[in-house]
Image (cartoon, rainbow, N blue to C red; front, side, top):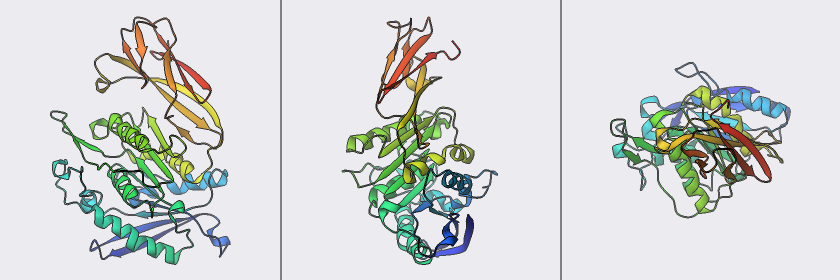
Length: 352
């Protein structure tokens, strides 16, 4: 494994300079002929090295481990540093449905220019100096928070360049902390751009900045557009994850596996009891979170499957299609979740 840095890479489109961070896989120097898929990343100063808060995604270590285990093939990763005070501008598109004027920050959207920077300036340079596979089937884009938002917009607009997009903890709505009014800050697209793989995830402890219902809403929109659940469009919800680089590091192997690995056969389905929140409604008393694990190491929250209440509280409390326990809960609620021929069971409250 080799880590490289290009200092002050110039963008004429954006009229600025930024550092570019590059990961070359262990076998890159061993062959002068082999070419590699490429994953482009936003917030590049955090993906291999500690950021301002001392945390890093440590993607170089994650990729090395997955390659050594034979779970993914060798890849190149390219992280473009953000421009700090200009980050929100560059990661925001001025598209229909993007109400940037009501964002929590004063934004001058430059997302289209940043998109062109990646496609017209950075990618041609990388393809010229490194041995890359250049087509969309071998080119991915990954980001978190506002980086997730801009990944979504670029991917939906330019699936001819980026055939795989990873959208982690995406910033999709501005939620006013005073009155909880919600403003959508992402565009909705017609049709189904020919993306090969889509990864979307979020955590349950990200605060009002990133709400699970908004992220799952985007997933449902993409399902309605016709993307194949689980194999093409994968979703993962971690009820314990917050909005930090450490949380993204903890699950960053999953989009790499989705993009560059082979999931293999379904190995296990599990069900985890978790707390409900006020956002689930006044009658919500708890919830169940399913997960599916595959032989190749991929883990996701299944899109599909079904819940049923199976315990003594049946008829008193019910488990809805989203796994939310609703109604009076005078006794433990036993629930079953079935997915692709496998069934998992759990009890609410935990420990009962």
